[in-house]
Image (tube, rainbow, N blue to C red; front, top):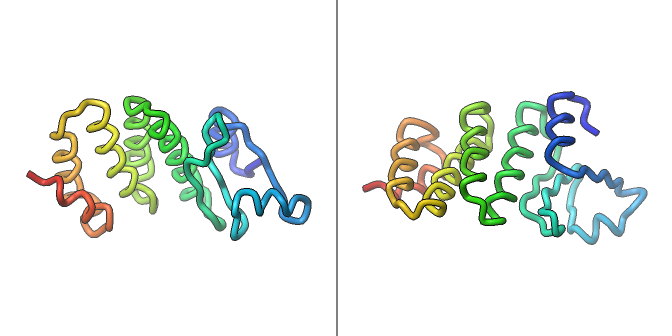
Amino acid sequence: MYPDPKISDFINQNFIAVKNHIKENPEGFKRFGAQWTPTVIIADPHGVERYRFEGFLPSDEFLPQIEFGLAKEEFAAGDFAGAEPLFRKIVYTHPNADIAPEALYWAGVAKYKGSGDASALAETATAFQSRYADSVWAKKASIWRG
Protein backbone atom coordinates (compact mmCIF):
# COMPACT_ATOMS: atom_id res chain seq x y z
CA MET A 1 0.00 0.00 0.00
CA TYR A 2 2.87 2.41 0.74
CA PRO A 3 6.26 2.11 -0.94
CA ASP A 4 8.32 2.58 2.25
CA PRO A 5 8.40 -0.84 4.00
CA LYS A 6 8.65 0.76 7.46
CA ILE A 7 5.41 2.64 6.85
CA SER A 8 3.73 -0.26 5.09
CA ASP A 9 4.56 -2.54 8.04
CA PHE A 10 3.20 0.01 10.54
CA ILE A 11 -0.03 0.32 8.56
CA ASN A 12 -0.44 -3.46 8.26
CA GLN A 13 0.18 -3.97 12.00
CA ASN A 14 -2.19 -1.24 13.20
CA PHE A 15 -4.90 -0.60 10.63
CA ILE A 16 -7.20 -2.15 8.11
CA ALA A 17 -6.10 -0.21 5.07
CA VAL A 18 -8.64 0.74 2.43
CA LYS A 19 -7.54 2.38 -0.78
CA ASN A 20 -10.12 4.38 -2.68
CA HIS A 21 -9.48 6.07 -6.03
CA ILE A 22 -11.62 9.08 -6.89
CA LYS A 23 -12.07 7.97 -10.51
CA GLU A 24 -13.18 4.50 -9.44
CA ASN A 25 -15.39 5.53 -6.52
CA PRO A 26 -16.39 9.23 -6.53
CA GLU A 27 -19.22 8.49 -4.09
CA GLY A 28 -16.69 7.32 -1.52
CA PHE A 29 -14.98 10.68 -1.73
CA LYS A 30 -18.29 12.47 -1.25
CA ARG A 31 -19.22 10.22 1.68
CA PHE A 32 -16.05 11.10 3.55
CA GLY A 33 -15.93 14.73 2.45
CA ALA A 34 -12.52 14.32 0.88
CA GLN A 35 -11.48 17.62 -0.65
CA TRP A 36 -8.08 16.64 -2.03
CA THR A 37 -5.94 13.63 -2.73
CA PRO A 38 -4.46 11.88 -1.07
CA THR A 39 -6.70 12.05 1.97
CA VAL A 40 -5.79 9.73 4.84
CA ILE A 41 -8.57 9.06 7.32
CA ILE A 42 -7.97 7.22 10.58
CA ALA A 43 -11.23 5.74 11.85
CA ASP A 44 -12.02 3.75 14.96
CA PRO A 45 -13.33 0.17 14.81
CA HIS A 46 -16.88 1.56 14.47
CA GLY A 47 -15.96 3.62 11.41
CA VAL A 48 -15.98 6.96 13.25
CA GLU A 49 -13.33 9.30 11.89
CA ARG A 50 -10.75 10.19 14.55
CA TYR A 51 -8.08 11.94 12.48
CA ARG A 52 -7.39 12.97 8.91
CA PHE A 53 -4.74 14.68 6.87
CA GLU A 54 -4.73 15.66 3.25
CA GLY A 55 -2.05 16.04 0.62
CA PHE A 56 1.21 14.27 -0.09
CA LEU A 57 3.77 13.94 2.69
CA PRO A 58 7.26 12.45 2.45
CA SER A 59 7.93 9.38 4.59
CA ASP A 60 9.54 11.31 7.45
CA GLU A 61 6.30 13.29 7.91
CA PHE A 62 3.81 10.60 6.83
CA LEU A 63 4.77 8.05 9.50
CA PRO A 64 4.39 10.45 12.45
CA GLN A 65 1.02 11.55 11.07
CA ILE A 66 -0.37 8.01 11.00
CA GLU A 67 1.16 7.33 14.41
CA PHE A 68 -0.64 10.45 15.64
CA GLY A 69 -3.89 9.16 14.13
CA LEU A 70 -3.49 5.91 16.04
CA ALA A 71 -2.89 7.85 19.27
CA LYS A 72 -5.96 10.02 18.62
CA GLU A 73 -8.04 6.87 18.14
CA GLU A 74 -6.84 5.49 21.50
CA PHE A 75 -7.53 8.85 23.14
CA ALA A 76 -11.05 9.03 21.68
CA ALA A 77 -11.73 5.52 23.00
CA GLY A 78 -10.87 6.75 26.49
CA ASP A 79 -7.67 4.73 26.66
CA PHE A 80 -5.54 7.59 27.98
CA ALA A 81 -2.88 5.24 29.36
CA GLY A 82 -2.53 3.75 25.89
CA ALA A 83 -2.64 7.08 24.05
CA GLU A 84 -0.02 8.89 26.13
CA PRO A 85 2.98 6.71 25.16
CA LEU A 86 1.89 6.78 21.51
CA PHE A 87 1.92 10.58 21.55
CA ARG A 88 5.27 10.62 23.39
CA LYS A 89 6.79 8.19 20.92
CA ILE A 90 6.20 10.74 18.17
CA VAL A 91 7.97 13.45 20.17
CA TYR A 92 10.99 11.22 20.85
CA THR A 93 11.30 9.35 17.56
CA HIS A 94 10.23 12.18 15.22
CA PRO A 95 11.19 15.34 17.14
CA ASN A 96 11.43 17.48 14.01
CA ALA A 97 8.15 16.35 12.46
CA ASP A 98 5.51 19.02 12.02
CA ILE A 99 3.09 17.03 14.20
CA ALA A 100 5.54 16.65 17.14
CA PRO A 101 4.48 19.79 19.07
CA GLU A 102 0.84 18.76 18.87
CA ALA A 103 1.81 15.25 20.02
CA LEU A 104 3.57 16.71 23.06
CA TYR A 105 0.45 18.72 23.92
CA TRP A 106 -1.86 15.71 23.66
CA ALA A 107 0.59 13.52 25.62
CA GLY A 108 0.18 15.94 28.54
CA VAL A 109 -3.59 15.98 28.16
CA ALA A 110 -3.72 12.17 28.03
CA LYS A 111 -1.57 11.89 31.16
CA TYR A 112 -3.80 14.37 32.98
CA LYS A 113 -7.05 12.69 31.86
CA GLY A 114 -5.69 9.27 32.83
CA SER A 115 -4.42 10.30 36.25
CA GLY A 116 -6.42 13.37 37.24
CA ASP A 117 -3.10 14.88 38.35
CA ALA A 118 -2.86 18.48 37.14
CA SER A 119 0.93 18.41 37.52
CA ALA A 120 0.96 16.50 34.20
CA LEU A 121 -0.22 19.69 32.52
CA ALA A 122 2.35 21.83 34.31
CA GLU A 123 5.10 19.39 33.28
CA THR A 124 3.96 19.64 29.68
CA ALA A 125 3.95 23.43 29.77
CA THR A 126 7.49 23.33 31.17
CA ALA A 127 8.57 20.93 28.43
CA PHE A 128 7.33 23.43 25.85
CA GLN A 129 9.69 26.06 27.25
CA SER A 130 12.67 24.03 26.06
CA ARG A 131 10.98 22.32 23.11
CA TYR A 132 8.76 23.81 20.43
CA ALA A 133 8.60 27.11 22.37
CA ASP A 134 7.49 29.05 19.29
CA SER A 135 4.70 26.66 18.32
CA VAL A 136 1.00 27.38 18.62
CA TRP A 137 0.84 24.30 20.88
CA ALA A 138 3.24 25.94 23.34
CA LYS A 139 0.89 28.92 23.44
CA LYS A 140 -2.07 26.64 24.13
CA ALA A 141 -0.17 24.92 26.94
CA SER A 142 1.06 28.20 28.45
CA ILE A 143 -2.04 28.44 30.64
CA TRP A 144 -0.92 25.27 32.43
CA ARG A 145 2.23 26.86 33.85
CA GLY A 146 2.09 27.16 37.60
